Length: 611
Image (cartoon, rainbow, N blue to C red):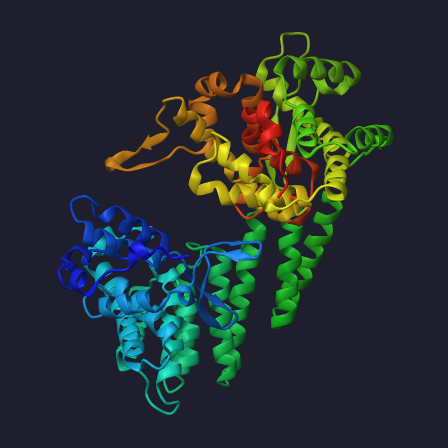
């Protein structure tokens, strides 16, 4: 429901200083514009302007995304059968205000959204649609002018604008297709702006977003010289080979090859595809680990075969691949022993049956394993006493691709074992405890909850509302994450909850009166990351959360040689198998533990009434 407080009268709209809205930042991120508008006007000094800013901010809650082939507005969040607002939720009064504002606001980054929303609710208003298209064209021109003015001081963020401009170009062309006759030349302003952008990037060899832009030129401007598009794409890929992310450069080679092929130049198409294959070989040769090299060589051989590469080169790579596979086979040996926890599962299930929801949650929290450095040291000593070779051989940790990501020296038990050595060696068998806890306690508890209790997102509404570590703007995020966790959707739960641990630590740190801001050079500031918090602010965090809890969080989320779940998720390495591992589930429960533990004495009230 949109508040009536956002309704602005005609008299108010005529008396507003619209110059305030001229300097909206040049960005294609809705959240940045929304933040700017939320902080732009003091409500006490300029109440009318603040009301306009609040209404405009509302337009950037929903996101412009390409769904299928069409660019549409998507809600910020979906919670069960509810969602955040979309343009269709605006009533006649709001739409009337926006229509008036479309004649007052001149900044294209605001005007394009205003006109687009009005058109969404009134498809017959062709004039407003054309105004939206013209505004999108002005946005493109402003980005070009910004780069020209900054010249040598262009930053990576400035160049990234060319990536995120894609949705706005697509939206302008979508509206054009709806309001202009099919055989017409369309909107000349957007056509000129897109061509200017393409020529500008091509002349300055700006790689970011160029592949998408090439596809746009091919699809919407068929009268242009298509072979020239292919030549430009190939030249761009050649210029950035070894400089930009290799997959992106390969994609540009493939785009160029497809254009050449469709226009009858088979030789050039083959040249581009072989250039892409040679990049794969370069990546393979750069790998120091055998397993990683095996994977990339296999891909390279497949590409060379498909694209008609040199036969001798293929045979040489096949021989190299066979040798590497033989060497890699002896690198990794997995020895597994089953642990029988059937009695534990039976006992936990029996003890939780016919119990209240609050009791079940208390049981899981009470049994959540928290590490202790002294207990870890005893365990490492016990293991070392049983393993004669632990004092002769160090430890190496490899990721799923076979890359060596951590190593530790041999363990010398004749001397005192320091904490770092304890942690390195304890991590060898770290995940066994998680497997026992998740399969022996949490899963039986989750089963009882599913059979005897009505679990919904609302089940956790009081928990997220009362937890001192959850900020109000994150309540819906945690509510959905905890629901997904107890529902058994471990992909959804891990992708929602694991990133939140950093924010929880930072919130607790700030609540204690500390400053969690990092002050960088040139007067810049940023939030302190979890790695810095657990390194530079460790003593303070231990005094707030206890030494044992901080140690546990460090081992699961941050420590090299461990699961490093935060790092895996942040870098796109959180595949399905990792999401369903017991350690990942334990990490999600650790987030639940941290949020719920302060409320433990009041659990009967927090979970007393199931909704």
